[in-house]
Image (cartoon, rainbow, N blue to C red; front, top):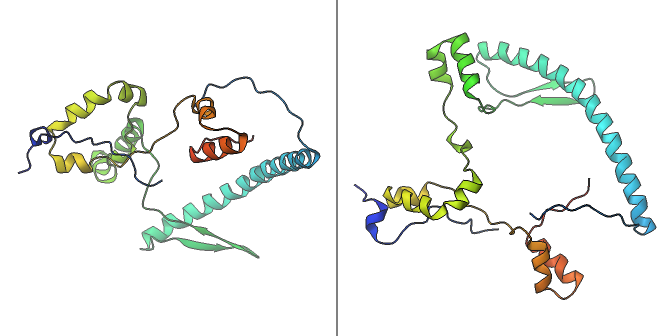
Length: 202
């Protein structure tokens, strides 16, 4: 029987960092870029607008296909066919992908299953999604040492493998602080890329 981790002497930090590889918002100002960039901005916006239009149109067709496919899938399941299948259009086709997974279910969803299909169905068909558990990051950060200490009662082999390795992230205010480590904009850009600062256009 494995001994609790606390009796091994050295503490095990269960929150290992994965080995491989926000600043406060302020009012944004406006700049006038070179003509080439201005043209690209207008083209980007036009493409975005067209994409939104076509996305809305595609959703209407997709919903119709999904309704038919779901009806067909449930008929197929009763005939022992529980696999993905293709649907032919006049010139193209789509695939109805079958997955042995569901979206997250809440307590209300579980109660609805119990009410409609019974306790036995709920027991057989629904389970806890332990992978969905997330720490409250603020509480976790404020109590990190106490949490690690409390977990030491677990056997070391359990504690060592209980959590997937965590990632690192840039500290709040990292962009301003990064200026102290660089001498020119090119170096700052390189450092911000290394820190994977999430800047984007919208």
